[in-house]
Each structure stands twice: as structure tokens, then as C-alpha cells.
Length: 217
Image (cartoon, rainbow, N blue to C red; front, side, top):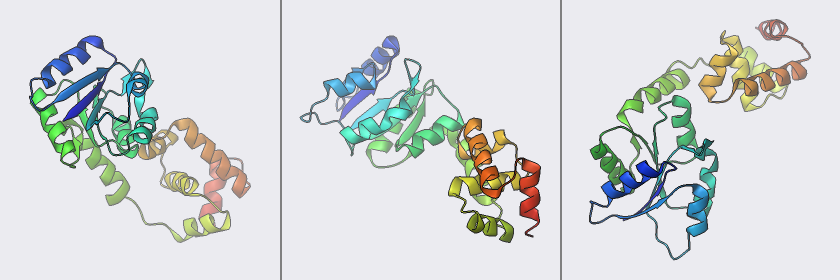
């Protein structure tokens, strides 16, 4: 199995390479950045798995995952990071990562993660599974059915999916921060959609917007 390590910490990169090379079936190629890997890659290379750090030289590598997918569509990508936040986990999964391993976990777990991902199985570090549970609970189990007035607002004012989600959050009494966390976007993004709702419904504040919705009940 040919494994590529993309990690900007030289000491950690070297340690990971030494550890993985203890497995006779592993061929390991370490790189310090996505750019360095792409510049070195040739179509003759057969790469089975990429171990990718999230923060590379203070840049979020998840925003560049598409470059790897475009170059090698079928390669497996296992995120190897110290970032144990829900936002990074959900971003990684939404961008097409095949697994998420936390640095500092038992190295035997890393081998298990590599084998799982290579066998077309998903792998999430045990310390992160609570986030998936909370996400499922918030977005599926506790999700309230769409009310008649919200359905009417969506049709009448031609609201897009994100505007409808933001309006639903406001109707449920959520703050901007809570809505942003639920949909894994920034607070500024929520503010943008709130202003869009104001413009489409011809109001200029949240109170007037919610009053218009409730008037349809």
C-alpha cells in the first residue's frame, strides 16, 4: 500500500513515516504541503491513501481537498489532525474525507483507521463520535416539522434552502451563533441571509419578520 503523508511539522512527519514503515506492506511518501505533493505527483504513481493534516502553515487544508480529488479521484483520504472540533469534522466529511483521526490517539488506532479506510469503511476517531451523535440529534431527531406558515413564506417569497433554514432557526428562537453552529457556517453568513430575508419580505428587523410569519398562522 502506497501511503502519502501531508504534514507541515517536520518532526511529526518524520515520526509518522518511521512508524508506518515498520509495516512491511506500506510504502510511505512524506510531504510538507498539498502543493509540494501535487508538484511531485505523476500519473505513474499509484497512491492508495493520503494522511492529511488540517492546518498546514496556518491554512485550512480542507478548503483545498478538491485539488486532491480532482488529481486522484479514487484515492482514500484520512484526516490526521489535532483539531477536535465539530466544525472541522463536519467540514472534512462534507468535502469528501474518508476518515478522521486525532493526533495523540493510540498509534494502533491509526493503523486501524488506515486499514478501515483502505477497506472502504468509514473511520471516525472515538473521541469525535459524540459530535456525530449531537449533529444527528439536532438535525434529525429534534428537527421540527415545517409549519404551514413557513411553507407559505418559502413559496410566496421564493426563499432558497439556506434562507428557509435561517428563518426556521429564528422562528425556533435560536440566536445567530446557534444557527451558524447548526449549519456549520459563519455568523456573517447567517447575517447575510437574514438581510436577504428582510429584503425579500420587505421588512427591516427580526421582530417585523417574525410578526409577518406569525400573521400567516
